[in-house]
Length: 200
Image: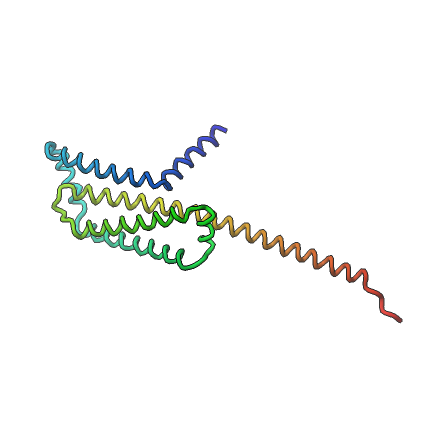
């Protein structure tokens, strides 16, 4: 019982982390607070200043180009999924409504698009001469990664619910076909039993 309770608590904690909007907002606030803390420390601490410069040098032109490509791809994926869900009635749409996760999924996709657009603007417009440039790029990358993980987690839950719904529909269809066949067999048996023999 204790192991089951522990697993249940772990699952609930993971589910809350991946579905609650507050965690993303808290992370953004932590990024902003840590930005100003590092900015204040770097002025008086040469070692921290050196580490920040090393982190900035990590994000060279090639890596920034790859990140822009990745962010653009994610925007395309989010837009494609929004278009599919908005313009067609599929099993996954029904699962969304049953789980009451339609607003959560739309929120994650819209938030993900805005994050990636902001990240692309940062990569293009912000010069890499800034001291905290490397920190900003790292923080944005982690934020986008968290949003992507949350999106995949929610999509996986919806997919599993959709599969369960399909399995239930198949079982129901098979049961109805079996009942219909049994009813037909009874009618045929009844007709055969009550059929009059031909007159000589």
